[in-house]
Image (tube, rainbow, N blue to C red):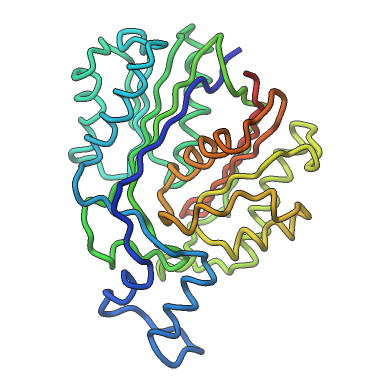
Length: 316
C-alpha cells in the first residue's frame, strides 16, 4: 500500500500581531462602509480569525528545510540514499529556488533521485502527494520526499496582505512510501472556475464570495461521491488557514458541523500556503490520537481559481 509515511513542519519563533502588520501598510485600501483604517483593520482580523502572523527573521527557506530533513533522517527509518523522488513545492519563482532541491539532495547525500519542481499555489501540497503516489507506483520506486517551503523572505507587510488573509512563513515535509503508510489515499479531486479569477487581489476577474463557496462545496461533494463516502464518516476537514468566516460558511453549505473543520490554527501564524494542511494533520494526530480507520479530508483553493481536495484514512 502506497501512502503517507511521515509528516513534519517548521514554523518560525517570531510571530507579529496581525493588526500591527496591517497598520504598517501605508496605502492599505479602505473599503466602502468603513470610516477609519483602524475600524477596517479590526474588522479584517476578526472576520478572518487572524491574531498573529509567523514571520521568519533569522533563517532562510533552505535552512528550514534542512531542519526538517535532519529530523527525518535522525529517526533512522529512511536513509538519504533511499530517496527515489524529490518534489520541491515552489512559490512560483525559479531563480534560486530552481537549484535548491539539487543543493539539498547533494548536501544530504541522496544520490541521484528524480527531482520535480512543482507550483500549484496553495494546492501544491495535495498535487505533490498525488504526483508522488503516481510516480512511485508507475516506476516501481519506494520513497518520495515532498518539500514545501512558504517563505516571503522579507518583512514588508505589503507583501503579506492578500485581501482575503495575511500570509506567514513556514515549511513542511512529507514522506510518501510504497508498502508502508500511516495514511492511505482514498481519493482526490481537482476542479477550477474555468477562467482566471482572483478574490481580493484586484487583478483578473473578481470572483464573488458566494461563487467561490459554491465551487468549493461542489469539489468536496464530488470527491465524497467518487469515494462513496458519507460526510458523517469524516473525522475532520482540514482546510488551508485563510479565512475563518469563509470556512464557517462552507461548513454550513456542506451541512457539516463546524466543529469538524480544523480552524484554530488560522489565529496563530496566518496562511502559510500548503504548510497549513501538513501542520493541521500533524497537530491533529498529536492532539486527537487518531485511530486506525478514521478519515480526514484535506482541502485547498488556489488563486486561479482552482480547488483541490483529498480524502485520507489513518492506517497505522
